[in-house]
Image 1 (cartoon, helix red, strand yellow):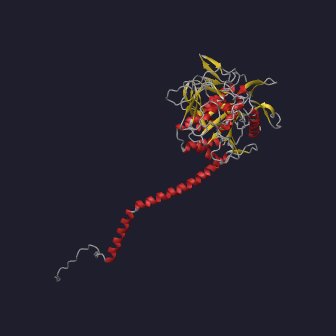
Image 2 (cartoon, one colour; image 1 turned 90 degrees about the horizontal axis):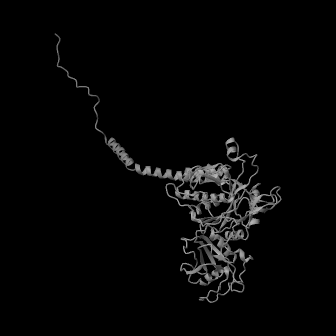
Image 3 (cartoon, rainbow, N blue to C red; image 1 turned 90 degrees about the vertical axis):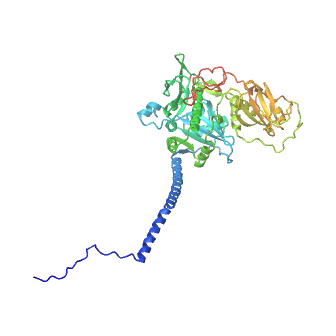
Length: 555
């Protein structure tokens, strides 16, 4: 047998034997652990830094993008040059006038839908100022006063333009562009124009739609087959762009009364009232809702392609205009219509003529809004500083008068202010009183040293009026609160202490606030016309004093 040696037992194969970690390995592991902890601990700081950096970058890009956007949109607006524009005063608080025109051009008509809505360019050649308004902006008082000029006003259009110059309707002066219309308004009416803005039909409609429409209350069903307007249900309702355009264009309106269609014979006058109501509804809409960037973009996009401005109206001017008059309350928006009378031309055309001196009175008051008080290098010495007599002792030009309407007669403050201005007084402001004077007695408010100024103003007034002390007034500043149309303005008697004041020559009977019935002042709201409203609330129609109805105009 073979010899068997001692048994050899081999250890199990458990793989390579793990050596204990060296000092280097331990330090490396600790460094990695600390680094990881520090990284986790300060991760929020890095994220914050990244976020802030991103915001700064976005802001920088946004500012640059906004600048590019404004330039892009501004460049899309059509500009015109007019040599007849008057340079706007450099003072930021100085008032300025903008001619606002709604053009009836059909040059944009390119398809059957537009032709059906607006008419063809061939049938409606050229262009006319379908809407002509001069807006006076007073930055100091934050007011906008709009003077509407009837399209059928018969005036002497200057120049040598064939078929336009000479005696013609004022809207024809726009046929070849705004330059001749600007010249006509300045020369015939005596109103300076600093800037010009025009919008055509599609732009008007698009801007209203961009606002989501406006809300207006229609007292009754109305229609106009020429403009396409047809409101089938009365009440407060949203008016979209197409309907708004039909409304402001309507000149042949019919309204429902007692189950029958009645014709509104006021033509352009009634339409001007609807346009005024439209603008107030737009102001109410802007004040009621915040405009999102998308809405602003849509509004601007609708406007720029259908807007024309003068080439002196810069981006900065437009920005300042939007900033200064943003959120304009309806009470700071005053509307007036130039007083006119009916006239038939030798050719048998029914037109309108300026009703003098009432038209000039209104223009004078309009031009005085926001204008600085006249200053005298050597004012005459005041006499009887403590007098209690009724004799006037102040020169008219030194008395600053704020005229406030404290009645229910629309436009009365402007008419009184115009007459007061013609007596040489300085009109500081025209507006509405906080509350009406129910007694029907007008008031002159004066400060501690202003009684003589109040007496001087009272000397040219007839009708019920009281003098009331007001400690809030200073110097020769007085406030005239007109309570009713019974208050009249008449020249002072010859030989009185104020008669030496230089006053424009006006017949004595023309400064009264009582206007003949054949003069159209458009100060009575027609009961069938709409007015701004708020959905879901009970609306009260505007209150107006009752005046004789104007004769129908068949034009």
